Image (cartoon, rainbow, N blue to C red):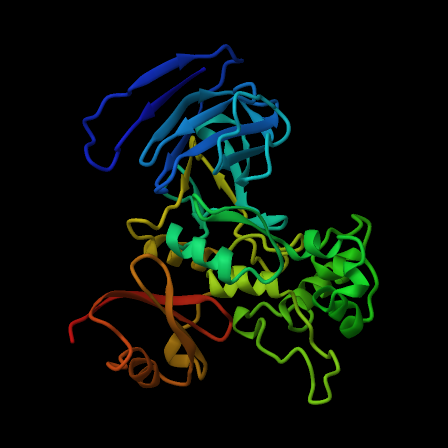
Length: 390
């Protein structure tokens, strides 16, 4: 097995690999490429069944790329990115230290195989990342914020608890609702957690985002997913999620939801796992890409723009047929900046109303924007690049 490192990759396509290391491993023909677009050094580490490179770590300075051209099959895989130096320890099955973000994958079958991949924020959130298969049919899954915005969100937006914060790099890990609420006494002594019990009358760790017993009925899986999103059973329209008030006028908890999941999905516009059951109604960003041949992982993918990836991921999240907007009386719109950040979003009853909403000269600065339009079924109906010239 070999891997190559390429620095300052965006400055020149003619740069040659700085170093190549040979590592003994079973034969394989999968290609995995990891890029560090973050403005800080990262340390990359793979685990799996089996670990593809023995569980060693690879230091990546900003703009480095690691290419693994010939990897064997491995399952239950994760790519960990540490924002602090983990030292020389190795581990083929577990993270070396907690200061990390990770993506999940199963790599098998070579050029004609199916690569499964997703981004999991179930346990915690720390670094923006994108994963996509190498074929044209593969859809990206992405946390579409810049490094600077993630730094801000972690420090000022984390709705649970920020652990392992390092002021030098401005990063920590924001705990997912489940990990936050299973701390001793938090289930009944912390209203963030206890509100779910009070509002839904369901006692069990899954009520704040944990895993369910595999033998549970499918209706319970769907119900728990709906509770996390503050909506009703089997609601597939993401425009409804996290919309209703959590409490009534008397302060009674009538519709509590997972605020951490709202932070992931709405504030950061990420189509990723925010709780264990987030794949119900197809909101997790999980992808199974056939004839893939290559898997690309980019840490901090939005430093140079990622609006196209955001639109592709949004489209992939919807499984209902695309409907004609002219036949709709409900149009949901989202206006993106080139880096994928949501500038404006809302609901309109006509295209004219959409046009008025997105062209407010008092708040929209000059520049390039991307517009996504959705029907009432939640499916992406159209997208367009727009130049604001005022």
